[in-house]
Image 1 (cartoon, helix red, strand yellow):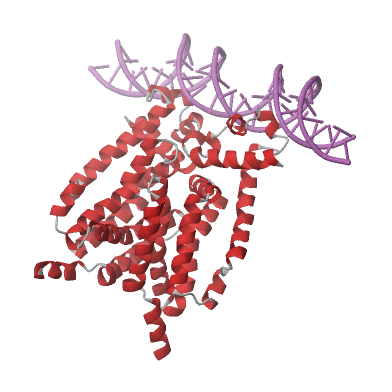
Image 2 (image 1 turned 120 degrees about the vertical axis):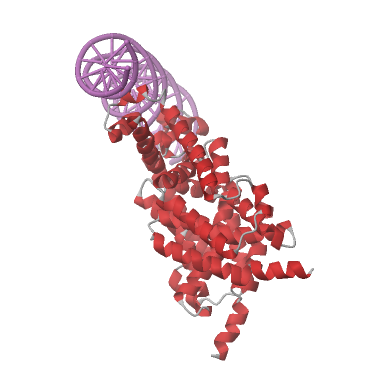
Length: 206
Length: 206
DNA sequence: ATTATCTATAGATCTATAGATAATGC
DNA sequence: ATTATCTATAGATCTATAGATAATGC
């Protein structure tokens, strides 16, 4: 169904810019090219549109994990041994995904705007964009760290610049410059703060 | 005028949680303990309340800069020579300010929710919370760095975790743990990534 | 025959004003 | 005397439904 998808895309775009409450169903309809009452043939309410966007993102996320062959749970991270180059490539992909992928970018903005309204939005924001990725990186770094705390500290130092870059992108920063900066950050991080290779050797010596 | 201040505080609290559009003037009035029409004796419109909050923050910010004796413009940063300990103390103060200071915390959330709606909100968000602080730190680090780019990269690595921590706080993280983590981050940063003292010596040798 | 759209509109809610009444300051 | 509040309400807007009409699929 073509209209159904267009309603999801256009309303997400509007929600991402103005927030759910500030967007009227008439506005959504106009963006789609129909009249407001026609929306109700596809969705039973305005809230239903919102929730369908959430569901779409959740299934899209599950697909992405499957396609990329990334460890899908935090527990599996410990098992997966990744090289610095693999982590770099994965990180650049994440930056690209949350900025230049239109659906992901708008969904991220939507969560940003809804995060203080409901526990559900807050926990999704957390899982996708803040505490979640930090935890994810901490699990990856854990085998190379002396303590949980050290792994978590390294994960924060590693991930926080990416988190900041999402916002710099929204503020108009050029994506190529951000990608360039992210690569430099990660190389510096592995050189000075947390050298996986060196730590791997230390681990073997013990 | 007591009611005036209460209207500002209560409406900021509501705007910070739900966003400007999702809050009705009746809701603000109820939080204040009056009826909606009474608001209009203090403010000429709902928008006027919003703009008065912005103005209050701008003057509060000017005061803070004056009180703390911080370099008030980016240009002055280069002149101000700061020690690692001074930077640590200032950073902890900033984290405390944007989380536990109720007005600043709510104002930050408000900007977070309004950032995609107007250029004005976006540029304030940028100046107070993302690109601004990075630029500020880059100016401080500049004398110790070989290039502008190196200073900027260091500033990003330094500041991004703070930026992330504001959000972790919103997600329910304990402020004392965050402060502890910030201190560890900064000490690690100065130890491994960008040691000011060592760089100071290098500078003198050249 | 079914599905998608439209016009018209009900009913709720929202911002803001008018005018009356109560509280406060000289 | 002035300022702050109240009730009542105008006028706009918003979500959603009812019922008619056009488009699509067997």
